[in-house]
Length: 444
Image 1 (tube, rainbow, N blue to C red):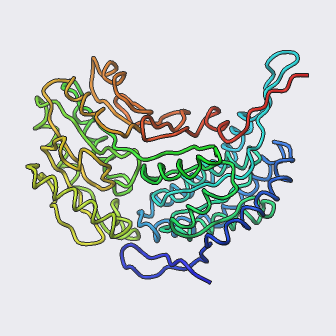
Image 2 (image 1 turned 60 degrees about the vertical axis):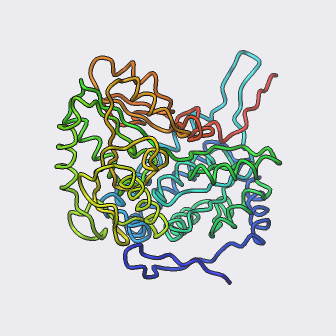
């Protein structure tokens, strides 16, 4: 039996192993999932809600273990890992209720109603940066809609997924929720198998491969494909508020977040003050292992990602960017808080997602220049504007699925939406939950 070993990103010591699901095992796994779906889908929405709620309540028994595994496997500081585990578990009952309401049968008129029926088997492919929360955001609506689910987690965080699924399965019916552990070969086999839908969070490149593989079977897709989120700071902005957001957003989870601020365009008239304050605040962040006190930036998840970050920084300095804080060369596994200015359109920092605690800044003289550069990207997940009068007008011109003025994106009870090549479909809220179901019109 082949196994997948999970390693601590700091020490590179083995944390644990899981059995790999080989491509040859996928058809049988999906067949058992399809068989289990028949009975699961036949339950009433209320019955499924009750079982899912009980399963999430049962997760409380392993909440601390989940938080520790999140920290151990991907390096997230323990406080944030605790928030992720606790938030996922505590929102379970509310989330199940919200989805149940969204999927309830609707009366169109006296003789016609809309029903939300199961699709069948849903493959959920989840990322490593929020290994519990992001998997949960896709698993929960899929299950509540009456589908069975096969979860293929990132090979960077297999132990979190194993504990999560095994604990839920102590309550859920057999084979309604299953695991497929492994690398991209396992994922490719799962997407190509006899499933009905793929719900994916990950890179744009992988998303394109999934679309191609899903096309022959016309499988349903919901995909979030990363971002390269811009921030525009107008001359009329509250500079202190803008600085606070810029640093916090860029450094959250060591910058390994899909809606991290990746590119900052600041009005040249306030750029010196903005940069001075950014450097002062960024320099207060502490880098280190997840279990040390006061650490708020952990390691980069793996060597490949670390090398990508260093390559982007070197590319920028070689093309004329100036480092205000930090360096363009770091030893594994950390990237220290880095502030760089003079970003230009030909730099990798502007063109692609960095996924690191790096603040990349460029100055603009006209707001139209800032808007053009913010929109000059195949990505379109989030975008933020800080400013006074005129900020709303700027926000209306930004090409992103989620846009915010003087705050972060995705607030309130809004869905999680990507535009352009950052998204295909979306999840969250009633509209998003219904993408995991087949709409059926019944007239009688």
